[in-house]
Structure formats: C-alpha cells, structure tokens
Amino acid sequence: MDIIRVKDLVKKFGSFVANDHLTFHVEEGEIFGFLGANGAGKTTVMRILCGLSAPTSGEIMVAGYNVYKEREKIKQNIGYMSQKFSLYEDLTVSENIRLYAGIYGMRKKEILNREDELLERLKMEEIKNKFIRDIPLGWRQKLAFSVAIFHQPRIVFLDEPTGGVDPITRRQFWEMIHEATKEGITVFVTTHYMDEAEYCDRVTIMVDGRIADLDTPRKLKEKYNAKNMNEVFLKLARKAKNGDDK
Amino acid sequence: MSFVINNISKSYEETRALRDVSFETNEGELFGLIGPDGAGKTSLFRILATLIFPDEGDASVKGFDIRKDFREIRKILGYMPGRFSLYHDLSVKENLEFYATVFGTTIAENYDLIKDIYAHIEPFENRLAGKLSGGMKQKLALSCALIHRPDVLILDEPTTGVDAVSRKEFWDMLKRIQKEGITILVSTPYMDEAALCDRVGLIQHGKLLSVSKPGDLRFDEAMILYSFRCKSGIYEYLSKIRGLQGCSSAFLFGDEIHLLVNGKKEAEELERAIKGWNVPALSLKQITPGIEDYFMALMKSEKHDDLMSEEH
Image 1 (cartoon, rainbow over the protein chains, first blue to last red):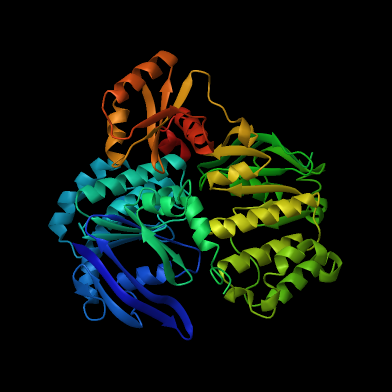
Image 2: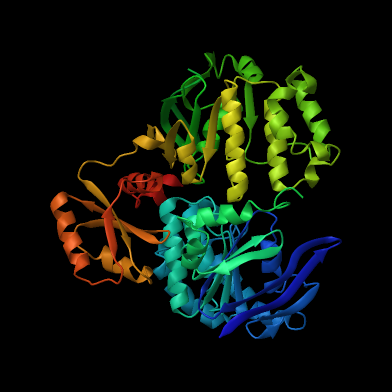
C-alpha cells in the first residue's frame, strides 16, 4: 500500500521553482531515502509532506489525507525529527518526552504508562531528570528519535538525523530505524552520509528540483556502474547547474 | 614545525573539553583533526587562534607562543570558525575589503591567492553576505580567512552540513591552497575526508586517540576484520553475527556488515559457523580496516560506560 502519493508536485517561491513536477510514492513500512545536493529541494518536499507548507500545484496524499485540506490530520499521523532542532535543551529528558507526547495529542495516562517503558528501553532511567544540554549528543539523538515515534505515528520524517555524531552512535541510530520499521512505521529520511543511503529500501536522488532517479540502492549501483552510493550520487549531482549556488 | 601542541587541557565548569592533548604539524602539511561533535576540536582551534587560553599546557604557532606572542600569531594565521561569522549586513565585497583592511593589505595585493575561490562568488559581489546560500558563504569565509596571505590556516568544520559534491570541491580548493606553502589544520566529522589529509588525528571526548597517515591505520595483529555480504535482508543477520563466539563487534557498513574478531583460531571457527548458515550469495572475506573501523575500535577501547559521569 502507498502511504505517500505524490503526483506532479510543483512548488514555486516567486519565480524560483524549488520542486519541478515531482511524482513518486512511498510504500507503507519502507525506509525511503531522499538525497540531493544543498538547495536541490529536499527540505521543501519534506515540509509539504508534513503539512507545514502548501504546494503550488499537484496531487499529494499523506497517510490517506489530502495536503491541501487535511493538514491537521496529517500532523497527527506523523513524527518529525531533525538534527538542527529536536529537543529543548533547558528541559529535562522526562519533560521533553511529556511535552512532545502532549503536542502529538497523547493522553496523560498513556504518556505516564509508556514513559517508564521508553526510559528503560533507552537505559536512561537514571538520567531522566537531567537537562538535555547536559547529556551527550549521541544520547540526545537517540532520545529525539524515540520521542518522534512515541505516539506511534504511521510515518516518521527524519531530516539529516545523524549529522556530527560518532560512527558507532550513527550505526546504533540506524538500528533503531530498522526496529521502528518492524513495528510498521514508514521512514522518510534525508542524509549527507552516502553509506546510509545503502540502508534504505529505495532512494530518491534530487537534482535541481527534479527527481534524477529513484530505485533500490542495488539497482542504482548497477545502472550507474558504481561501486557505492557515493559514486552514484556524484555522477548524478555533478550534472546540477544551480544545485548550490543560486 | 607550524603548530606545536604540548599537553593542552581545557575545562568548562565540569566538562573536560581537552585532556592532555599533544601533537605537532609539519611545515606545509594538511593535517586533519577528525572526531564527532563535542570531541574538543573547536576548543583546541580557539586556543591555537589565541581566542581562549588553555588551563594547562602550552602551544606555539610558527615558533610564536600562544600566550606571549598572540599579536604575532594573529598576523600570520587565517581562521575560519565553524559558525558563519562574517557581517550579514555588509556585501560580499565589503566583507572582503574589511578583512583586508584589518590586516593592513588590499584585495588587489593578494587577489591571485583567492582567485579560484572568489571567482565563484564574484558575480554576486554586491549581495549582502546574509543572503548567500550555504556554499557561497563558505567560499566567502575562506576568501576572508586567506586575504592577508597567512602562513597557517585553521578551518573549523568547513564541510559540515555540506553535500557530497560541494565537499569534494572544497577539498580540491584546500589542496590548491596547500600548494602555496600554507600549512592547513582542518577539522571534520566526516571520516571519509581523512583520506584527503597528509596526516590525521582522531579525537573523542577531549582525548587524542591517535595520529597517523591515513594509509597507515592498522589494527593489532590479533584483530581480524571481515566484510560480510549477502543477497538481501542483511540487517537480519546483524544480531545473529553478534551472537557468534569470538565476534567482538559487528556493525552495518553500507551494504556490508563489518565484523571484528579477536584471534586467528576464533576467526576460523567463526568463518565455519557463518558458512554453515547457507546464506544466499554469501561473500565473507578479510579486509583492511578503513578510518571508521579504526575509529570505532579505538572508541570501544575507551570504555563507553563511564562517559556519562565523566563527560558531564
């Protein structure tokens, strides 16, 4: 089943075309990678799919809801996490969990029940009253992801979730992503680490506001006669004329 | 010797940002300091740029002491901080002119040094710096750091958050700057950039774990690294492999699993065990460690558990 369906998505900012007739779908339960150079239009797509920004034109359905009319419904069915902003530094671990759960519309009783379970799973019981600013970055990222899926959304959007973290934490993070998909959550993720593109079921590569290609990592590597996804990316993205400097 | 760092330590309240760090860079070298966020890279760079003092230890830049001779150091050093710190409300050209003037020079005098870089943004000379894209800001910041033709250049995570194509371009620029005889000290969280440096220092939790040429990274004799590949569903094998006796760690690496085994005998047994699983299209072979394998092995030996209490 398709959990995201995008047909002819166009988004313009004045005369600048950020997304130029994009058509793709995301299957329920898959890890869908979204790659592209800075300025290729990735964030714009993600904002539209999350119901934060209205498209200029196109038919877009997320979790069965229409992005023009049912944005609030969409927000209730998704989770979101980014590297740049995820948790409140001057709130404690526990306060962050409760705050986000409340924002995502969970009931107080359910929050209290599941909070302990989450803290135990993350082995964070002892630090639940520590401020976020006082815990290491790797722990924050794992907590931020757990908070984003705490309300059991159907889709979670991850915007460069692993920037700057150490290589072990980065891999543990991806193991958490794999575990989440086992529970049926669909993952839509952007990254600058090309080895992480290999962990996706399918990968989209955006160049200059268009989809340059979309397929499984294996098929992309075969098609472009590339050793790894980095080579695939460089081959496609180098063709970009205005990727970064517009 | 361009940078000489002796037993530098630095703490912020309870956080120990740098712990007894020592190393030296050679004249004209491109030296990479590689480690995740919070490793202490920025603190070290700020000390060398004479912006903060260390609590303990000493350091010099081109023979000038960071405490006594900070005025001299500032004349010969170019510094590009991690956060964009040019004037948003000045134009591209005004920023460059400002930096040239501060250092008592002119754009014309050193134009040849920055030409390759500045040419990319010259068409937008009159645009306000705050309105530039990320890649253009990066090029302007580098131009400003170079405009007084420094002997040594410190770049704090110039490629963080930058896509793979722009990262490659940036490293090509660094190689050209190095050819001008400028010593470059650069930090990055991207392990794959290590291969582009003459030597790399690996840093984590304020401790320098190792310094070596990128090609010289080797494990202990006894440690054997394998690459495991299969047709599909590789993630499902991860916990199975971790459960094998003799396997000291196993992690996903793109479309492979890298597994580390301690001991030759253990390796043979583990190989036999995996081959007994009848994995479709199995490929299992010994490989030489890459920078990430190496870094991860060093991290593990650093005792993960006590970091929480010690670090913060």
